[in-house]
Length: 428
Image 1: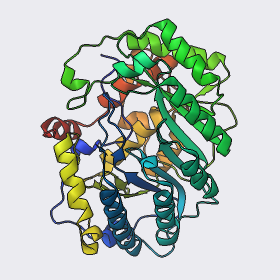
Image 2: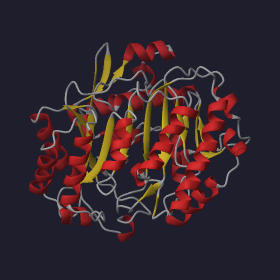
Image 3: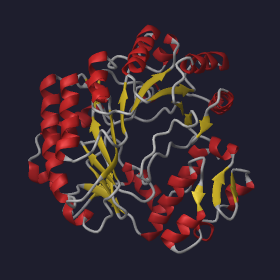
Image 4: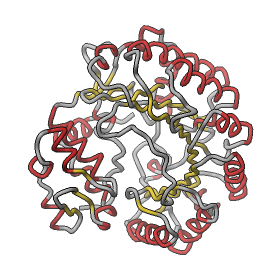
């Protein structure tokens, strides 16, 4: 089994979504759903450049008038969505992603945060608020707005502290720009700084990987994410048709051991955190819902995951954004494309979302939710035989070697129905 099949950050993947017919009103979708600890996600589909490894739903070089029109549309969507939610719906955490949200100017970021607070009702001063940024856009004026509005976590995609490696990943940036951005983030006083790094870049060696790790550690970030390089269809690197090998596994182990020795704890295959720095939230990804705003955002209840159309190719992304900004308010009151989860898919999602975390799956919580034992529903003997899974009366967990193979284990747990939908999805 190859160690790098796919990064599973949600189940099912959006390539398993299909047009919903009929399109259900959001008021019906959320009517029976617990809404006391929701996740609010706002999607900004703009970047100053597109990295060679990126398959996110985003476009580059958006003119100011398009950004303004997008925020207008986001406001119409927020009004429709909030109207569909129960009056007592409450958001336990908020995140702004993309794209690069700090592509927005400072005043536009303030407008976005106003929308989250004044329209959606999120209490940004009292609950966790995270945002993604880039070296080129982490400017003091933007960061000041974010800090004043209660942002608790800023995540910056550095990928490599070596200019030639950044260039090899088709991410042209300079080390000096990265250091300036990190200094600005620290000066703004956010409780949590996360630095993203990538391993497996062409020309990267254990020595250069160690260099980037140490450069990141010099800032003592509260979190560090280590991402393996994936070359996906329709991305810049994918179009080069360049091969890359599984030196990634060796670099992963090197990075993991180095961060553990530096005092970090491992939260998942990718996430490492300084003990005692995690921001608590009532939101639980296995049981609580997500409300996504923006044309690339997903939303989910226990029984339905939904979004807008998904694309990677430049032409299709631009067409979807152009359509989104022209939608009337009424168009935002229904779910467009999605995936309905039956009982077995809900159990499977709970397993995947829990098992891929270092804490593992709480067997009593699973039993309380579904009335059965997880190992009766999903025998994991094949993974246990490889030394990847261990269990006791309280938990089912991945071993350290299992965590290293998370990107193989996650996809292997997908249902055949979801795999068939993903395989038949026409990439665009």
